[in-house]
Image 1 (cartoon, helix red, strand yellow):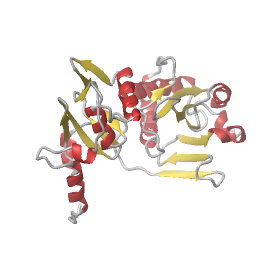
Image 2 (tube, one colour):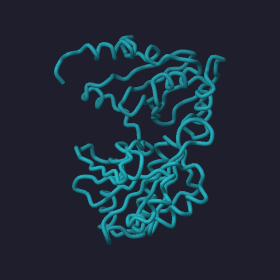
Image 3 (cartoon, one colour):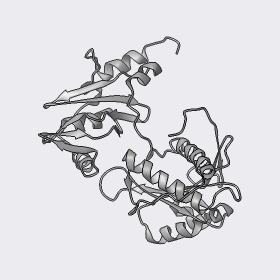
Image 4 (cartoon, one colour):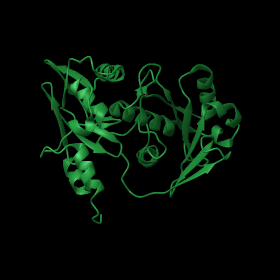
Length: 295
C-alpha cells in the first residue's frame, strides 16, 4: 500500500462540469488520471490521452444487491479496449484510467499494474470484480519493477481521494488507533456471538476472527440479509460450528450495518458497539464532540 505521506492533487475540469471529463495530476509524479462518465465516452475518446498506454478501471452498480462492480484492464492504447467495453459491458457508468508521459509506460508495465490492482481488489473484497480471469504478472527487469511499484503506490494513494475505495485493505491496529487518538476497539455481542470493530474514516471495520450469528431474526432487513449472504459467497464469512466467523477484516458503510450483520437482527450500531468500559459508540462520539482540548 502507498506510504501515508502528504501530497497534493491538481484537478482540471475540462468541460466545466464537475461530473464530466476530469484530469488529475499528483505532485511530483509522472502519471495522470483521466476520469469520465460513460455517457461522455463517444465525445471524449478522441482526446490524445485515449491514445496512450494505460491501466483503467470501470465502475458501476451491481445488478443485484448493494455496492459496486469493478472491472480492471489495460490497453496499449486504452481507446480500443474502452470502445469494446462501451459496446459489450453494460454495468459500468464511470471510468478512470492512468497514463504517463510519452515513452514512460509500455505494454508490460500496464500488464503489471493490472495484475497488481486485481490482486489488491481480490484481497480487499470491497467490491465485486467483473474480471473473469486473474491476469499473470509479466516479466519485468528489476529496475522496471521498482518503477512500477512507485507508480502503483501513487495510483493507490490517489484512488480514495477520487472516491474509489475498492483496493483498501483494512489495517486493524489497536496501537495505531491509540496513537492517533481515534476511537478505541469496540465490541458488539449478543445472540451467542462476539465481534470486535473500529470506527475509521473509511467506514466501520469489523476485525478478522469476529463471530456473527448464523440465524436471522424476522426483523432483519432484506438488504442486510442479502449482504450476509454475499459475505458468505465471497468467503468473508465462513461457517464455524453454529456461527459464522470473519475470515478477514471487513469495512462496512456504517456501524449499524456492521452490528446488524454480526447479530443477524436489526441493530443501532451507535448503541450496540461498546468500548471495554461499557460506553457506547454514541456516548464516545458525544464525548469527543464536547472535547475542546487542542489536538
